[in-house]
Length: 637
Image (cartoon, rainbow, N blue to C red; front, side, top):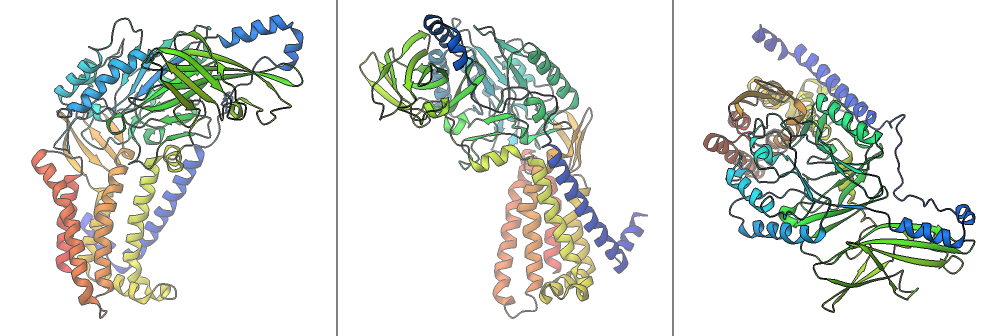
């Protein structure tokens, strides 16, 4: 039956029907992707979301007139002394054996920085270990987990009341079924055997708590490849929604944290609308995009503030976050860098028609004893103001400004734009920092343009569009030879002639169609996907004995396959036919042969990695099939 259908498909009438069907499917898939992309931009209804970053002060001018001068001063002082919470985030540590200096550097961070900062919580957003051997074989290594445990759990001093909250990354989940290594060596308290969102509540001194909610999008089972993207099943989405609603009902400030950015998570429901119920979502995974997308953060159309952190592995970067009266400020620090200053909040209090009082709250961290902290507004307004030490790292300063003499400073953001902070240490040294320029927080650095795009789009949709477009255009180009009369007015005759030559050679045509379409239809791999879990991988789904994973997880690998094998081979073959009737064929022949040899040579390490090391990271089984077809094609053209 299949043989007869295939025989009909290669007839002229069958090719015409195929062309129409391929074109229709291509247009339909593009339309569905566009509709899906725009549907995610529809704003939430009946959900209050604060799009503003700075909160206006409750002490309006009318309120000032209702109180005496003494009462007003007491209220402003009480407001300036309210509590706040500061946290630390670190991501993509990638601890591995052999990197002695890197391990020591991380241990120094735990010993020194955490002891100095004393944060309420440390959020470790995934990829604690590297979990790779020979660079391509993905598996959990007990010695790497022992290094992590010795570096953290054995070094946290009992007198520091810091919650160390680590979460699984894709490297921590390679070749895992039940996350056994992570459960054994994880430092976080009250770790459950389930993936239920487990909230950590940081008690606020002013009555408003901070709830930290993890988003675990790691695959179950943790297959040895195809896990660049994360997956959040519907039942886990529901559990996270329930935990969020519970915290939201209590009036808590909600911070989500996880390894995967939302652009790399496959989910049946729109997570960004859910995460928008919180103040921000903190993640890692993408590092710095080879240095081209740093810093990486964005605010989505749903109101969600998503902030990705550069990796510790290459950049030794960590983040300090301050939550002050619902405001979230942060600063990314390269370890070791001292002192570090964050302007956690600025209150603006009108004192009448021509005077405004600003109360600035600073968090100052340094590895020496602080003797004094001073600040001034800018070079023009000159005099230094001594900051008052409240408690711990918190310092406050009060600035009275005559608005008629300084009309430019109209809000909190403009006020701190040129703020300078001078930190004096007991050794006599002084350090001058400028907000937003030399290591002081509050004024956010402008995000990378490409970083904002990467965090905003759905990467699996992008990979699919590129793949479908590349394969679809190749198939359409292959069909041009049958319809040269209709298209000759706007398509060069040489292109139509090359297509016709490939089209009329039945063996070449069939092999090319198989070469282009097999990844869409046939299995990529059949065998062990995680330990003793046997499964089969298709582009449209991954099936194991106990679970089914969506096909979107394979789209990055399909894109990489298209770029490194399918498009180069098709392009080389088509160009060879294009110049075969031209006088330049002798000059181009050697170049085309060299290009084909390089393309085939690139596949050999991928195939050997599978045959020798049993690694399916680079799609070795599929590349072996397509390479055999490539060699057969090259012999026949």
